[in-house]
Image 1: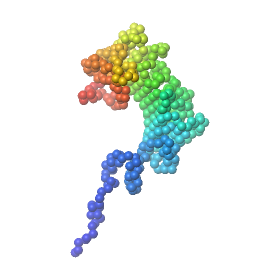
Image 2: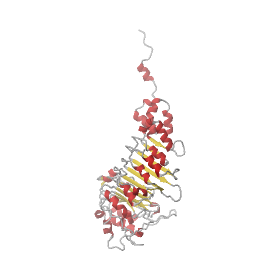
Image 3: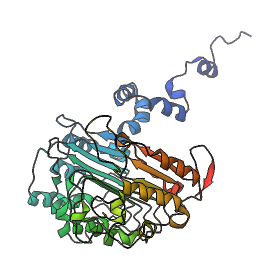
Image 4: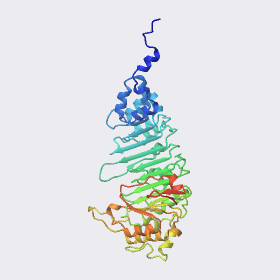
Length: 432
């Protein structure tokens, strides 16, 4: 019997060259994740199977390009023409804020979108009246999975004037599932006149507000929907805080049992002596607070002019003053602007005597003042003569102390801050 000279289907499959699509799904994903968006698009055009595989990656994160057909208006038109890609979108990055087109975009339900970043440099090109905003607001939808919302408008001029939001702009932020808001370079003072029940972000955990203007009422209105605020970050180096620091307390004290991180970053140059009655922020009620970034004068009060101690002009000693202000459960303390900033490169100065006294007392009396305090970071190293004596003192009292540059920051991990132990720099596992 003559042998079959034709290869079987099994033989043909065994001799076929393997292609990308024959790789395990996880391996192919790892490879294609390394490609640029342009290269992914070219690869997707090779055949239908590769296109089906890459489309979720291509549309997972969308970035607009102002002044081109790929701007916000172009994105709205694309999603209108191709509704099939809407469920693939996870994150949208808008490099412009267009009052009309942004509202049109938020009128499209994107069921899987969890993040939107609006970051506009320069002045928004189009001004829209309140009536037109109100009309467009009616069409905007609550995005079911939107949890991260950034709104950033930075004018590229020497004034750094915040962009004024109006009452009708508050509808942009009416997203009930947001857990993190960041507002930068905006003035949302007008939100003081909206109804306190209008904003609905009850799940808000993190609120960052940077170089912005607002009133006490507007701040309260934006924050009050939150039921579980854990991280509050206020940065105001240009012009200083918009009102006396004490006015923050009535609003944030309602989160004393949940707030883990509080960062109040404001310029040292501000003179709190001009604020009648300001004597520092009493944070003793904040039992959950684990990380605090603040200038000592905001915590202890301004003290007398040119004084060597924050207790000058009072009947308290420094230990009692700290005890009357300091949250006892704190684990990390970041001290802001401990020296006057010098515009002369390489000119460094020593930290102020009253600040050194505060740090020294906190280290020496740690067991009674803040028994869980393990880390103290000092800002800003580029302007500072490093306090080596404090470093040596800290070692004796089992505290890690260091000086950081302005660009250095920390991204708090709640699990680590709430844990019973932490890993020290030398690799040892220690108890808080």
